[in-house]
Length: 480
Image (cartoon, rainbow, N blue to C red):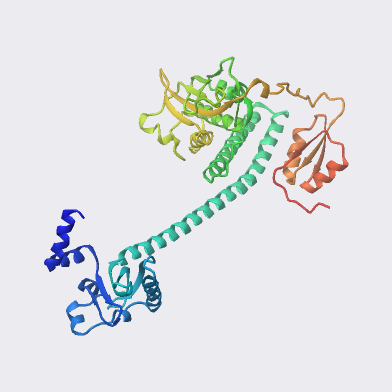
């Protein structure tokens, strides 16, 4: 025994104030019980204070602690004491509930040990109480809070799911008439109209395309935030995908006096990733650049670098790379204090006259798509003025043996075919069927329309079609 431990042991025996301080300062009560005369026991004053009693009054009018303990806890406590007395290897350590003098519940941890005579018979027990009431109340409050948070999370998830389903339904219903408008304006634009009428048709087309873009943006953002968007990773040629985006926007850029160009290294490899995500990201960035550039240039460039965080695999080959795509313009630029907020939903800047500013979803969607692709989207100043957006996407390089054939299917001129192309069209919307017929009028195409998937399957089994067009959402009748 350490000499200081021995000294304290002797001090406790000779100075009662030391004993009083130890049990009052470190415990919420101690007790000593005569097992041979179980009505004879001593409990420290602190225990009675915890239960709301005045110790001096308890001394004058004894209170039986067994009347204050919950009956079921007294029963279990008696069993545990009996087990401990039978075998000292069975510890006595229990959580017990007592009734406070004012009626509420006090929870204590009670630990004890038997004192045995020379024969090993238990004759006394001593132990200590620790008040756990506040801890138990905190635990109960925490459980309630956790339950409320769980319910709130479930409610928020349900609301998010309902919003996603609502937007998916609404977007489908909105896009149907929009496709009808855009399809018929395209048909009208090819008819005999004067210049004023063509200008009107152009306004309708641009307005419809803008509305369709907003509808698609709202649906995409909703799906991303709901965690419902999954990227499909397939091999693709980066240069081809970027070229398709640039060619799509070059006419609009030229009309605004902007030189839109693409620069890719000639040795840019094929990669495995989401071509759809890449196209949408670059489309949003180019569209954004067009909004804030009234003249000058927009440059789209691409490069691939090693992913230093990934390192090298066991056979020494690189298993992942970073595709960098930059869209740089020399437009009005972005103030430093807005360089982060522009990626927030519905955050917009004033664009030059003559171009719709949108509702502030293009950049948030682009950033979220880069996040989904394991990358990042940043903005910086373009040298000489303007803004440069850089998307970094994690991709996997494709070995030459994986690329397969690069042969492309030749385009078919529907106007010069010797025999009509027989197409099966599954479309339940009357307007869409009319629009499609009008758009293909004069082409060497024979259209067969059905209104649902069951009819489409029946027709496909019975007919000899060269191809099929399917609506993605149609009423379905039981197929026989």
